[in-house]
Length: 313
Image 1: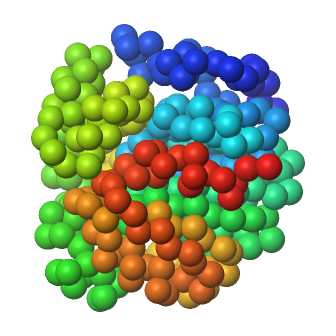
Image 2 (image 1 turned 90 degrees about the horizontal axis):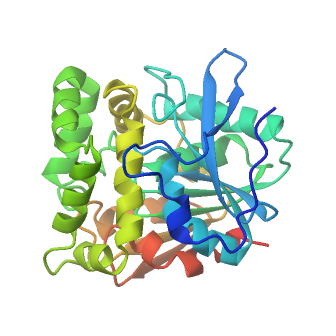
Image 3 (image 1 turned 60 degrees about the vertical axis):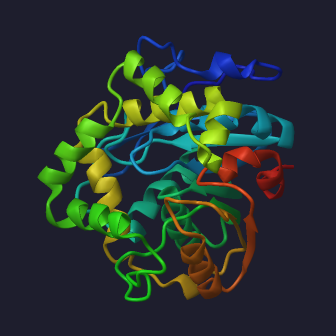
């Protein structure tokens, strides 16, 4: 059905990063065929015998982003199934999908892997994808952990200036209404070579922001996130733009309908997704526990040991 993963106990973090000459992982991703014929691929990190958890990385990032969480996942007893969403990495595209429709991919994955109970982990734009899967699979999903999750941009309360930045609103609207322009901008801003990855790692570590501090303290994790963006665009920019557009359109469900417990982490100094957006989302989730803490957009990674605790054995 899929390749058996190798033992990852005590493997150094760096061994889980792809070779810098390519965004390809050392081993090829696992892959299944969905009922509609599309391929769904993923990478695995953490403890292979641990509690299964599906990881949904941020906007445009492939499952290689899970490499940054390998060590804390292994420590917490979490088997991290880090997905390539449609059109990202090696997963086939599914244009014009709704968020609620995409969640069926997770349902098929859990069925084929014979996983009766799973946790969900989402970062940034991966947060809405985690909520969509929790909404569809309340009997399968045990817990959801989200870091700096994106709000539903189509809602009027989200469009208030105090909840989302003008740049965030523009970026999401371009993905929906001007995908070709959005794709051109994405190609310019996304690393497409090993040299570009290293330059951005150096640039990201400059300054006094919490994210700059994170990049200085965790260069391998920063590098892994950039490699995941490179890998996410291996099929072109249409996949990443569709990925954003699905979050920007109506989700197909209401936040109040997500009954699964949600642990929400948000950095008080997050400049990409405002803490106020996190407060608005968690106020509408019926079973949310909010953690607004010192940190930036990557607080989920900076506090991974603590954040992953509810997902482990």
